Length: 329
Figure 1 (cartoon, rainbow, N blue to C red):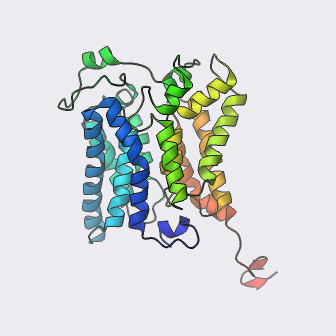
Figure 2: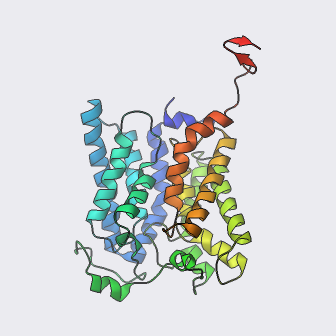
Figure 3: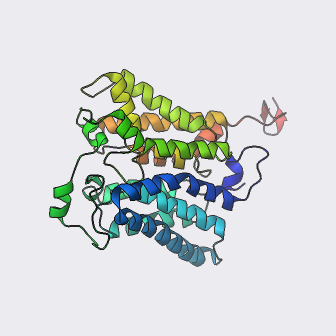
């Protein structure tokens, strides 16, 4: 059973190429918004990662499997590359997305069953390899030249600003309004900024029957409950909770990771467990970890647990309950 067959709803028999294309369409509004906020440099980063990811993926597949890569697999690689670009600030040097795209392609092209989403694994690795560069954010509409391979420290510092999530990490809340965070008029990673556009992308995928709402709903509800009952900010609990949901990569996880058929469980119960686990891990890392956002680590860890979740939540086949060694107990 391939990855697409594991998750597409009963009666849906579309080719995996169209499945991946729908995921790209769902992420397109957030990509356009990131370009509008950060200019041509954001566009170049979002061109580098899918292009390099597809090229490296095709080469590795050719070397390992001795066969050409079809359009469906290339579409999946493009999605992974775009997710990796979404997780980066616009001020990073261009070699950072190149490394990220290469990591994503290598993960996706490895022999055997795919267990990890290449884009989210790449995002987690880039935070480990380049912690300082992936934590420097600039003001929206303060464009850095796309012709500059690596912006100077002076140029970045003159435009630098802290994101709402970084402020939350210090036990405070952003002075901006929640509407700014919801619409995406704040500083942040290129594709994470607008919660509204990512939610619209998720709705599109649900209407297209590409994703079940269980994992995204469980993720959002878990984060909401933990942050409203255990707030760590200097504001009302409700404000802290909404600011936690609208900042960082939670909505990107709900749209991109929850729609990846290779890393999500088969059953609705399994998807619910997947979302709850991702929400708990995200909040724990945000509260007690060194990184400001734990979404990417949560996506990787929960994807590794998906086979176990499937084993525990998959219903027994009819007539096989109580069987042991091929005979009824």
